Length: 540
Image (cartoon, rainbow, N blue to C red; front, side):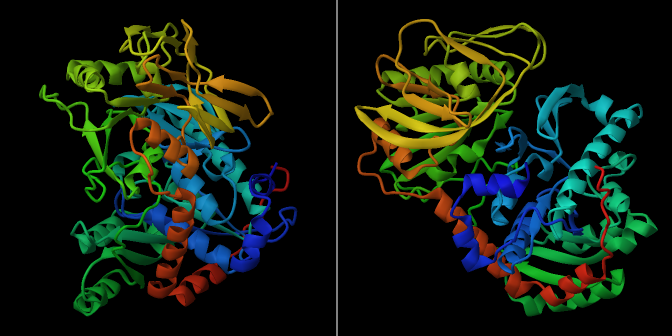
């Protein structure tokens, strides 16, 4: 099944949308695609955002375009309609192309579960935990050869479907310790012989040093394939930057393809980084606090709450000690975690279990999602060492469930209804977890869900006192109706309606418009035109 096939299943009205913004044609048409890669001088330079904007720009031009990231390291992920898992950024980039997420868009995904180990996901499927030294060290060539084979296999399928593939690099291509056997940056670009544009963030300072230094650390052939640079997040008068741009072009003998302005209030799903200082406008009508675990995952669940005009939204790091004072909020949320038992231990060690229970005594509401749901139970058992050392952990004892972590990850896109306080709302999202939670006593399961296969099941747990809700469903707040129902249950009546999907699409269009205005699209198109078409192996 191709990405376009999945897109049509997901959104039958896509043809009418593309009639306005650029049709991508018949997915069965075989083509041979151009490839353009975006690499960054640093992490968070803007690679994901630039690729997303270019995806929307070219899709609106009628180009058959798809995103690609050979290797991603992120804890924010998405479930694809072909039953796999990819980085959240690639799911967003797919939406920018009017496509449903597909595992070929991100064939290698690494999900860190400690400072030294990661879960390795190849073409959507989790393999096993692999120590960082095993993956990146001198003895890792065998595995990396297999990883590159998977990368090229996915790329080959995409090349037969799309005329343009926009590739996102990872981190920086100038990481000396990761150069040997690289598949994420120049190692990939050299293997497929594609041009590269380099993006650098001027807002953090040192942009000229970042660009010149990065190029200096590349080999001659790698330097040659960098066809231009983009400067990101510029504030102020562009004329004041012009002497620096002239100097830079003379120094590196490459064009500056554009200077992108700092876009205030650009609300797009983050690949991984979470700024715990982020808050909403300070509205005090309703206050929400999300506890931030060291291995928090899928924090994009809370974007609808951050954007809500009636909510004062805050993050709280649990590795900072609780001071014993009452927390003046209406709702506390425990998010997902890649290392549930370890994050729970830190939470308890720093006293946030006491803060949570005090909040409940004062009549506050609590929601746990995925790993946070598991923490709210009586116990978390890991007999096979799925998340590290085998063993059991006491839960917070707030819901009558026991969870056993299992090596087989459950991945599913689901839809259904949520039922609270005698009201019902439609809801849709995805499940992505290692573990089975068993209800030990009679309790309300407030969600009635249906999988893609048509299987219907009850899900989640609501405490008898109606103060605590737990669920494995990511995307609880994405539906405006479900979000309003949940906020009403938690104490916010007559909440304003927020449609995160409409906001996302508007922001993608805003981003594409910004690129059209500030990038030299003629020069960028010339770079694409001079790139020889690759001829993928039809046997792959």
